[in-house]
Amino acid sequence: MKLRTVTRVIQSHPSKDGDGVKINRVHGFNDTKLSPFLMVDELKSDNPNDYIGGFPPHPHRGIETLTYMLKGHFQHRDHMGNVGELRSGGAQWMSAGKGVIHSEMPIMSDGELHGFQIWINLPAAKKMLPAQYHDFQAPEINEFGSAQNLLRMIAGNATENGEAITGPLQKTGIETLVADWQAQSGETRDIEISPDYQVNLYVYKGAIEIAGKQTAQGHLVQLSVGEQLSMTALDDSGVLILAGLPIDEPVVHYGPFVMNSMDEINQAIQDYQNGVLTD
Image (tube, rainbow, N blue to C red; front, side, top):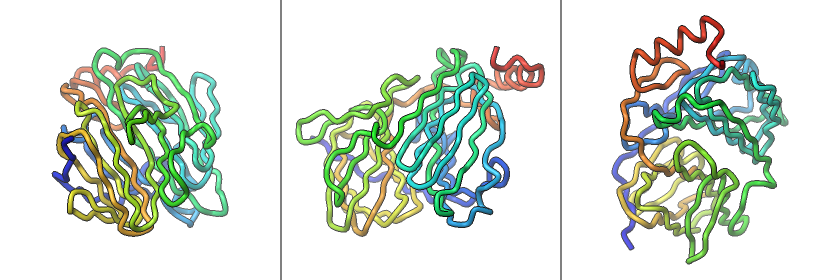
């Protein structure tokens, strides 16, 4: 079985979004090796001033978002009438499709906030489908292993020790696998992921080793083609596993819209300005 090896390491960079929310971001709109993922934002602070403004109502078209909280509480509202209470350990998935207007506002949990928002591209054939939303609280996230070596499967499917491991999120616009590996120093994990998937890892805590290469907190690791992902924790570590089928299509990004051409972007802007983005 062919092991995946490290091909590139990308450092996240400080940024702001929404109403001044401080984040660390990996931006990959033009990175075909990140596809189908477009961007990874990490929100982490114990100072409410860094995030209290949240993300007031704003539009999207042409993408999916997956928000996952390790610590803290966000409230989602959208034009469809959905109200989601995303709490520690939970996740929420939204497909903007042809258009969605939503807000995500933080609610403090002991003053701490730590979570991620992941942008996932949609293939052209699905960019203009109706919007969808679903949330998954912590008990719905499937867990494998022990507290010292815990794999939380959020989306998709993989195999470990000959057994299928799955996440509760299955029906998305493109095949993806999203998981959270939390492990103490010296623990290892061997996971079989479809060789058709591209695999990227975001190290949000500690440090890990893959095929002899070490990567520390705040970095995204891109991996080679293969079948088996083998990881070793070098410290008390946390890693997001982001895998999926690449989308071999043009990506044109403008603000909250991701389409395949500038004409489609201009149409999205016009639709939003005319109040028909979600029609």
